[in-house]
Amino acid sequence: MGARTSNRKRDDECLSLNRSYSSFRSPDFHVSKKPKFSTMSSDRPVVSSNSTVARLSRYPEETSQLRREVHGPCRLLKFGLSRSFHRFWESKNSELSEQDEVRNILSYNYQIAKSRAIGSLRSFPKDIIELDSDSQTERDASGDSKNEDDVEVIEDDKQDQRPRAVDTVEELDAKIMNVHQPSSPSVVVDLTNDNSKVESTEKMLGALSLDRDLSSVSAYKKLLQNVEKRTSRLKCLDFEIELNEKRRSILQSQTPKKKPLDEIPQELFTPLTKEEEAEVERALSTNRRRVLVAHENSNIEITGETLQCLRPGAWLNDEVINLYLELLKERERREPEKYLKCHFFNTFFYKKLNGRNGYDYRSVKRWTSQRKLKYELIDCDKIFVPIHREIHWCLAVINKKEKKFQYLDSLKGMDSHVLKTLARYFVDEVKDKSGKDIDVSSWAQEFVEDLPEQENGFDCGMFMIKYADFYSRGLNLCFKQEHMPYFRLRTAKEILKLRAN
Image 1: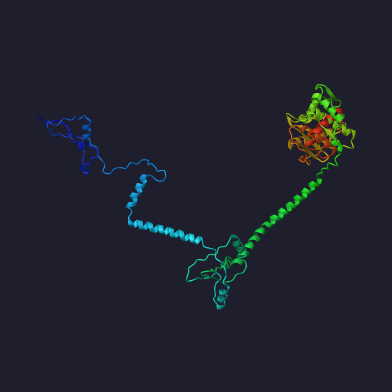
Image 2: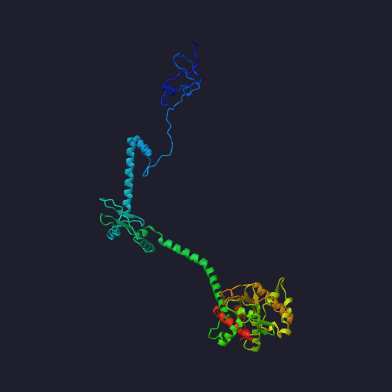
């Protein structure tokens, strides 16, 4: 029989994964991947080279010399660390030497002693502070010379104590404030077992601050220098304050004072009679197409629908405003000695003057002809111009009597463009009608602030016509928002009668 090629059969021990081989650990160990030939007896079974056992025996698994630890998440206990950590800590503690244990004990004792020492220092009681005058006198008599900043402490040999003077914040503040007072040149502290005598904070500060008088003087000098630097500025400020006060007093003297309500004519707030109230109520409830009154000079007709704007909460329309201003002009003509000489433009004047292309004097040039007015604007004391701001009524006044252009808005609005336009118009009007050149550059532009204010969104028209009413009388504006319902009824009555009171 010839030799048969086959892998060497290995026993069961060779297939065991837990078996360790000494030859594997040697550095000369080498695993050969070539099959080995051996003569086998015919009694042994032949193992196929393709079987799993043959492949495992051909490439045996090599075990490492040191087992690698498995790193994975460890389960923590509910109260404390994991069991693996405790086992690790116990193994580490077992490896500590006796020298390490002794060193740990000494450091632990040192920390305990340190904490106790710090605690005892913090809990020292407040010592009674006294100055041993007898010992101080004896030392002065014996001729011992001490410097001011030398402090001699006599301690008890039997007991080593550390005295500490504890003062409150108030005591320290009081002592620091009195540091300029003279103190004794030398300070002696006597410490005994029962009564510890320590120098006070005041004496200590006095002894340590040798140049306290000089430092206080230098501080005062610095303060004086700072004050002297500001003296010139303070003088300038005093002069400006005095000048502004004088200007304020002059302006207050020129501003007309408001008359008390007792001095205002009662006819301005005379209530309507029952017959007048009934007449106004019938006019407001009549047919809206019915013409109630017609004014001949202005060709204005008031219908029932037009008069509805005088109901509470309604906005005034152009017909009612223009007719009321015409009635104010007629009132002045009836009693010229009682009212100022005024001119009242209608609500369309400013729209024409300030057209789409800007200022246009030619469009209103014929509105004030001598034939129509029988007077010139330069002869009037005040000229009233209604201003319509889309949904809001304002009043502008050319006040020739006081040489100013005024703007009155019940909502405290301001529009300098209106005043500039009226100033230009007045110059052109005087030049065209009388041939005179008038200079209005020195006239003031005033946005009247001290006036009755509107407190709703529909009474702006009533405020505007009452501004003109009171100013044409030469009175201050002494009405309020609460008078608006009464003024609506009164205006309706005056329009129905075509007579302003």
